Image (cartoon, rainbow, N blue to C red; front, top):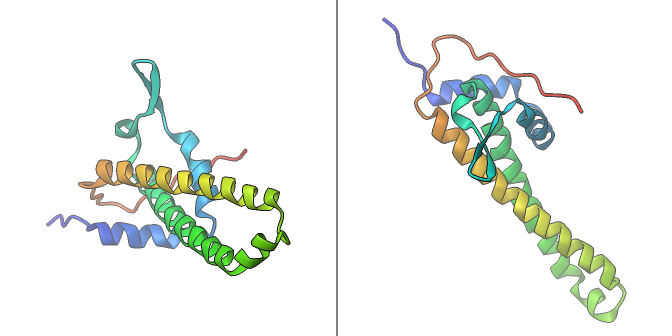
Length: 141
């Protein structure tokens, strides 16, 4: 009898191959994706991607999202602690501006990671392979 594997089993198998650098791996796996033109814009063609690749990308996007959210919260706590120094001018306005730009970029990264994760989950929700997953190696810059 052929028993379908659960998502938990698939993710457990992925965890064995999980790297300690999810953002780097997310960026290096994205070149494996195809893009298609819709109107005047290009969109990632999630449907044509291998499910194993989508699982890898989705898992890395999920971990990246979590890391970004925790990092932004930590920076916010640090800013609260140094607010008197900012008020006294001991921390330059350039430094505060740079932190603002960093937080804006991290917010965009977290949001984009959520969109990537959602797309990957959408196209692998009914995926249940009978054989072990074959993992896509990351591209190299």
